Image (tube, rainbow, N blue to C red):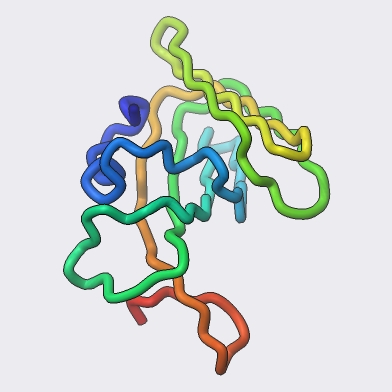
Length: 137
């Protein structure tokens, strides 16, 4: 399911065969055209099947991914949260094509060579700070 990541096994190890993207929220997108890289922070509330030993609790998990070798990047977003409704990955020659559609008709299209999961961060609400923070702190 995550063959477009060179280390997709990381997601499979923790979430098994769930599609962690559907219903998740894009928290941040950063396109760096000079380096040909797109980074995304995606918040998922999918069930964690095999949590790492250092994870004690979480409300959701932030998945930080990087797409490299960008040939094309197009994003149309609306104000507010971008909740993912559909994600389609296809392969054309030596490139992957990522098409994301949000519930609010937002969309992202990206042609890239390889993707990488940088890290998975368990997040928990901290009432004393009135925000979410990594539960690993």
